[in-house]
Image (tube, rainbow, N blue to C red):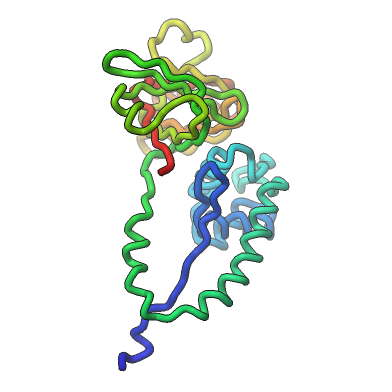
Amino acid sequence: MPDSSTQPEFFAPWHVHLGSGDISPRRLHLLQAIEATGSVSQAAKQVGMTYKAAWDAVEIMNNLAGEPLVNRQHGGKGGGGATLTPTGLQIVTMHERLSAMQAMWMATLDNTDADILPLMRRIKMQTSARNSFYGTIEDVKKGAVNAEVVLKLQGEDRIVATVTSDSVTRMGLKPGVSAWALVKASWVVLAKQEAKGLISARNFLCGHVTRITEGPVNVEVVVELKGGNTLSSIITQGALEELELTEGAPICVLIKASHVLLGVDE
């Protein structure tokens, strides 16, 4: 009989699904830590994240949930405070209750079922695209080769994607269907409001700067749109200076429709 020390241990972390995307165990722990500490900076330390990674996670969760889970309270370089919204607090409370129930249930499983666990892990997929959104298809205009798909996000924000007509049929894209939109940060261009009409990008969305993270060469700028969605853009130091960007400054984002990747749940 195999040494019990070599037997796999059952552990099935919760992925909370809001109908708008999964919240991973690590992000759930981040929400718990924010509730406990009232600070994103302190919560990041508790879960082993950098401050930037923690805010990235918060912004992604707010986008995917379709409503804010965390409210920010602006502060100094240390980050200011943060509180959970009623929905965020409800998720944390549910997670704690379900985790306790899961611990009792998992103890009843036989280790012979462990062979399936690697397969379960492989079929989970994450995306490297910095900007992830979940919304409802509002309109589809099909052409001979390509189609234009309008996705309504939380608030009144909308994003337009260009896909092949074959993809529309294969993915079942039609008004009322829920879908994902993915956009790499390097594909998001920043511009002043006055540039509207001078640039051909199909998506021209305006908001204000909420965060600037400077590196030796490039800069990440996070923009909150009017509907509450956030977009991350990677620009050069030169562009940052030329646009005179600071936190709170009004700014618009430009995205080509062909740079928006769409996905649907199976």
